[in-house]
Image 1 (tube, one colour):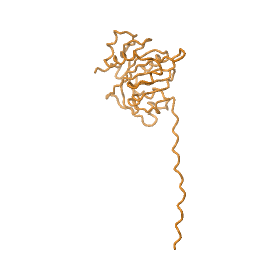
Image 2 (image 1 turned 45 degrees about the horizontal axis):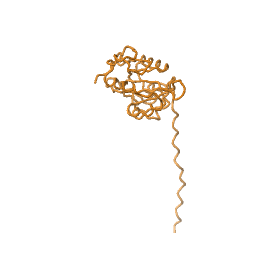
Image 3 (image 1 turned 90 degrees about the horizontal axis):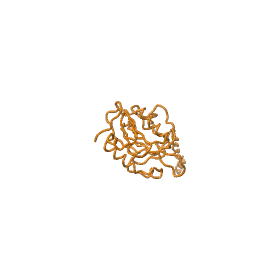
Length: 219
């Protein structure tokens, strides 16, 4: 299987379009949707993209998908995580309780391409389709190459997009150092995450047992 090309040593690339048709994707360019550019994706990426062309873009349908890693966020910054499926949890190394209410910043690290993040942010805020190649990190700091397909979801009522769905194609890499996520570095940065979850309540103290009865008097 051929590997996608990344800008720099472990950079990223992006393409975006306003429609649902096949999009090209290269490490150093942005192109509009066009069938003739499908050869720029590898076979697995192309198959994933073709499959997503038939995806019904509603929140109801997005949360039902179980056979591809899916993450759903709110459609406005900071794009708080609203839903993840079990396969996303297994591949990305976060439990549902750890991820919900956070942002995708929990997957970022020192080798995550900032230019690609900027392209992703611009497309997300304007409600456009985008496909990006990005280096991300799992919850335990394992780096992986992530081909991310982002689609705005159609609201069930009204006209304003309220959620975004992102579909992941994950490949693990061996030539990037693991990220130490001990303590406060679990979210990939030096400061607390922007949407921290409430701290768990401390366990209740053990029950106080009454003192044992005195021994019976000697005969």
